[in-house]
Length: 258
Image 1 (cartoon, one colour):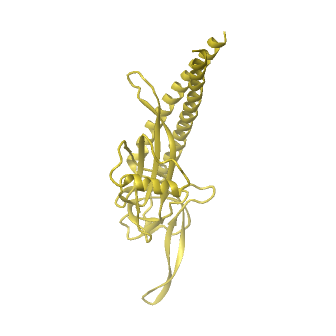
Image 2 (cartoon, one colour):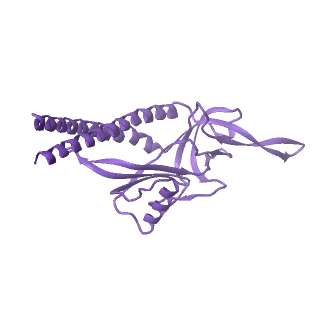
Image 3 (cartoon, helix red, strand yellow):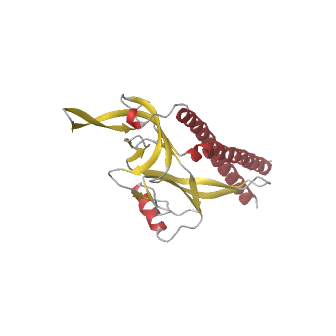
């Protein structure tokens, strides 16, 4: 019927616009990730014990829990220091040999707690996750483990998000024991005098955190390599499929009007 055909054409255009927008955002994200990765790997790592002055640096080491402990990741239930949760629904199928389902992100939230990085130099750095760009391996879940639905619901409701049921879930985690590279602005924070033989010297802790105009990047080695490829390919596919759907919808509306 003409009315239903027009509605279908309008739906094609709407979904196509959504795919183009989300795909374009993914491509932009890839470029941003590439810039961050280049900045991260462009500096020579410095032993934490040798850091004396404030300023930008890169350190490589192992994640350990900070004084505030760990968090519970919503999907996996693991003890982590940072996690990111994405909810996705199926929007369309790309088709073709290299094609696959096109997923639309309907929720994207993260949470972290301060943690420490140790590099074997005899000192550690405290990493503040607020405002940090964290890059880790993403794990997908089609079916959530027992108890995960409630954790997901509570976390997203706490973030003001009413949507917590999806066709697919994706979780990124940073765990104690993970190897990471950290690049960002650092400062020495005095902790008070620490007695040593013959004199007192000020003790300090090394804090690395994002500040206005200077980003903090925390990345596992494998995440940097993977981030530069998959996000870009998925984004390009979404843009192409979206443009095709918009064109099909507009042609359908033109035929109906003729």
